[in-house]
Amino acid sequence: MKELLVATKNEGKIGEFRDMFSKYNISVKSLLDLDESIDIEETGTTFEENAVIKAQTMMEQLNIPVVADDSGLEVDALNGAPGVYSARYAGIEKDDNENLQKLLNNLEGIPESQRDARFVCAVAVARPGAATIVKRGTCEGSIANEPQGSHGFGYDPVFIPKGASRTMAEHTSDEKNKISHRHHAIKQIEEWLKTQA
Ligand SMILES: O=c1nc[nH]c2c1ncn2[C@H]1C[C@H](O)[C@@H](COP(=O)(O)OP(=O)(O)OP(=O)(O)O)O1
Ligand SMILES: [Mg+2]
Image (cartoon, rainbow, N blue to C red; front, side, top):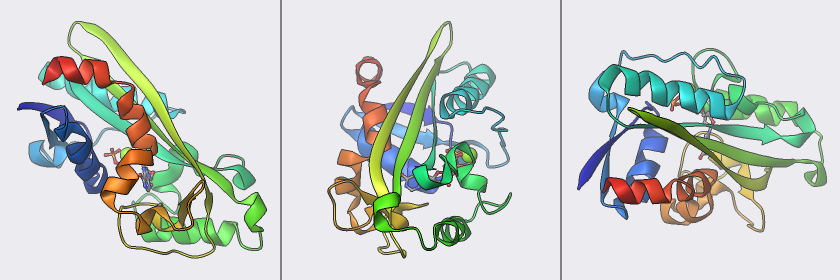
């Protein structure tokens, strides 16, 4: 079992990386195991830029391969907002509940047919002495009228994946990990993951 650092402090992401990397025989360490005071500024304007910033910052400090995830929700009726600002939508302090309440307020009165959205995830792999890899995965869906379900994290209680009749937070973690944006991004770094185990 090889250990890999995922440069995140998000417990929801950490759990999903643990579950999805286990099949590659890789165990996950995160910034919560390392040093909670590490705070990497997300100055990019795209998910890819921010994922690369997070992965390269830690790779340069530790001289080991580092994976990072930058992700968020794009809502068509809001011209792609909250997008890269998903974690800071309702303010500087991250608060999943405030964020999704603000989203529901901003979509008030907008009919179901115009509530299309997608989750986006960029996964970056920064490697000492080799080029950084960055891949994007998406999960199409729409925004519910009210939060439902208690699994997952972030905007999961208001996101209904395309073809589903319940929110992502009403999916088990195994179900989510088969269809999520994070799953689709990780799938694209599979070849590299296999070289790490
Ligand atoms: O599967 C997901 N299910 C629900 N919501 C999600 C998901 N994936 C991302 N999201 C939302 C949460 C947060 O509002 C933003 C990520 O922001 P993002 O900066 O990438 O993560 P973060 O600041 O929580 O942790 P960190 O930067 O340490 O990895 O998008
Ligand atoms: Mg962040």
